[in-house]
Image (cartoon, rainbow, N blue to C red):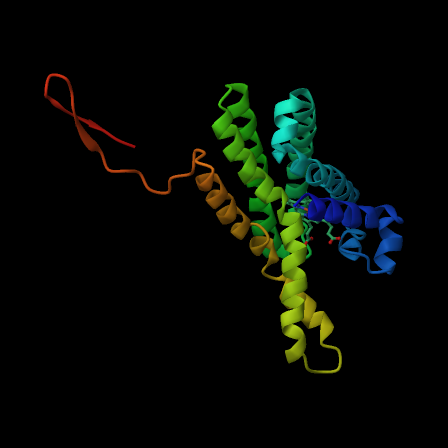
Length: 232
Ligand code: HEM
């Protein structure tokens, strides 16, 4: 997990340091041609997003090391604060960028929801540790990093969805269509399965899991023998 996070953070963030957005657009690097033509505030948000989210992706995996948490608690806290700052700035800027996504409304709803949940889960994780609720803190940070890791799973899904289409490719230049088809489901596919895996991990570690249903009220008999309803 740490290796894939570092590789994606290094490679994809690094490619935007190779030149201006205009020059990168001419070389068809990443999404440069989409954002080179956007207004200045959108271009700024795009760069802010790449740097802050890249920082969060590079720092996040280290927080799951038990050794670091137990032996270097102050370092865990320092990395945690920097990570949360990266997520906060990354989520806000991602929300702005999602409104100008290369895939229009689909990008806005998919990446926009991801941005909102990314910020919210970080906030829940932060609030939990402020009240010293370590179990909830761990659960929320697992959910939060599962969303950060969407930057990795997006690229894995993209590669896979390109590969499965190649044997069926036809026409003179099928690649623009293949790329567009492969990218279309990604605004949702990059993060929804991650959340499901995160919830399994949380349950396996016996941490406070999300309950999609409320348990029906159960009758408890008090010391006087009187029945009292408790629930939810
Ligand atoms: C988890 C919350 C995240 C959200 C909501 C988000 C949102 C977005 C959006 C909306 C775009 C533009 C997509 C388009 O126009 O189709 C984008 C691009 C990008 N994001 Fe994120 N992102 C997130 C996490 C990350 C992370 C952790 C990284 C770290 C590497 C990252 C790095 C990038 C890069 C490098 C691009 C340019 C795309 C490319 O060249 O392939 N993002 N992001």
